[in-house]
Length: 112
Length: 110
Image (cartoon, rainbow over all chains, first blue to last red; front, side, top):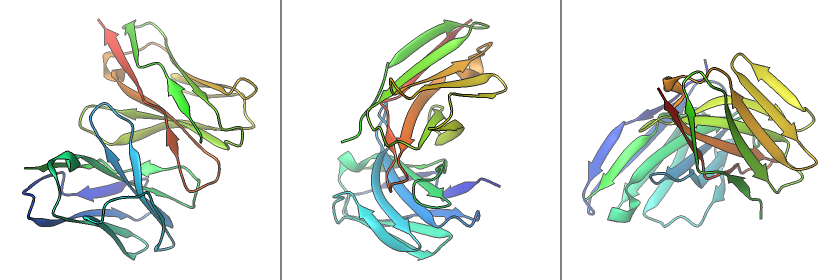
């Protein structure tokens, strides 16, 4: 099973809302990633967790707050987002750092 | 920093072969990947090649790696309309980051 699941599939939120994106994998992978992808562009790395510890934060604004409660689960908490944050948010996992990444289907976020 | 380049568009006729090219700059790349992304979907891993290999074949897909020229290609034999998508080349060097190319939009014409 090489499945990474993400919920919700779609999310519409106002600039004052607080919401969370969820990512889950049961492959025993120890590294998990959040990417942001704008239309017709490649994914941009936001955060990397390795063994449940944040190892990369690519200068992402504090209105995005990642959380890794356990090795199978990765959350992205959203607060006071801007319309330009509208994008496809992709989660990925790897057995270890630098190994093959498996992506989830993404959450399409629209900020009004 | 590392860079990965791809041509942005490719059109082929159904039944023909497609060849998507990628160049990269990181000489310490260990794995090179091809991902497929259909509209509104996540990235689907198609295939990957370890840097000490020259070629890998998997059904209709053939990956060629020229490590000296830092050139990677993906050949899709007997291209079908379902192959229409964006194809991303990516590389990693056992580090914490993947570097993606800009993606090649493949259009398959009937």
